[in-house]
Every structure is written in structure tokens, then in C-alpha cells.
Picture 1: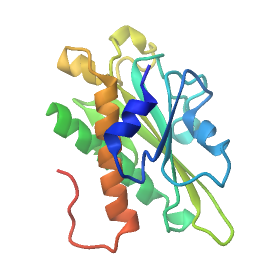
Picture 2 (picture 1 turned 120 degrees about the vertical axis):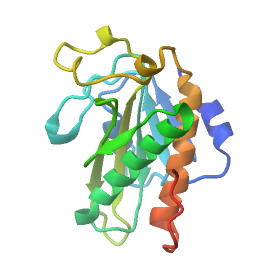
Picture 3 (picture 1 turned 135 degrees about the vertical axis):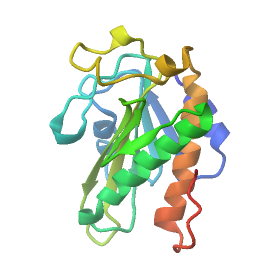
Length: 206
């Protein structure tokens, strides 16, 4: 399993990842974050080794083979309107694609609004859910799923022609702990820039 203490220690000072929880299983990591309640500090990240009811866009089911990928959700309090939630989806998807390009030199690209593709196949997706809060920044949960160490047989017949894992492109198994650290670092950097700092000339990741 992923090691929450090692992840937290590797990140240092941050917003995203200031608290990290790793669950063996849950219905969905978005549900697990929302069940924590509205008083949880921004930046909580919950990973699950398996989701029994993972969700994608348009009520699609997100398949999450146990121990094969990274399935996690982040609690955020961005100062944006609920109608502007698409900004969060774009931010998360772009950050995931940038991390894949940096770590593995794969040509990862975002297929709007919230999917990440490599070689014409989906390797990651994002689901953002927002909840209105009175007299406080709205609560948002950004759910992210990345197919990491799947073999073709780990995908259902329905998805096998359209989805892939990073390991399938690289012909080797990957260290999920290291990838999780890199993802959280990039997400924290870009979130701080896009949603917490006064806007300045773009310094997004390549």
C-alpha cells in the first residue's frame, strides 16, 4: 500500500497534502472526503487502494483495479463561484498531464474537459464536485484517477480499446509512491499559483 507518512514527509510545507490518509478501500475517494465534514482544513488528500463505486463524469463508473493505480481526492477551498468549477477541472487535468510528461517523457495531453490521454488512450481523469458554504469559500473536492500499473486484462472489455496505463506505454512497472509524491507537488504548486496568489505572468509547468 501507499505510505501516508512517507508521502507527507516528502512534501514538506504545502497546502495540498498537509494531511494525507490512505484507505484500503472505499466507495469513492470523493465520498470519503465529503464524509469528513465541512470543518476539515483545506488540502486534505485521501487515497484509496480500491474504490468500489468510483465515479467519472456524466455518472460514468470509474474502474479502479486494486493496487494498480492512484485514486485520490483533495479537499479545496478556492475563492471562486460554483459556476466557475470548470477552472478546477482544467487545473487538475493539466497538472496531471504535466507530471506525466516530466516524469516519463510521455506525450500526455488533456482532452477537454477533464481527461488525460497518451497515444490516443485515456490514462487519467478528473471529477470535481463543489458544495456551497455560507460566509466562507465554497468547498470543492477534486477527484483524480491515474492508471499506473494496469495490464490490458485489468480493464473491462468495454474499456480495453480506449484506456491504458502508464506501465503499458513504458513496458515496466512504476513506483506508485514516487508518482504520488510528484503529482501532489505539482498540484500544490499550480493550485497555489492559480487560486491562492495574485495572478502574475504564467509560470505553469511545461
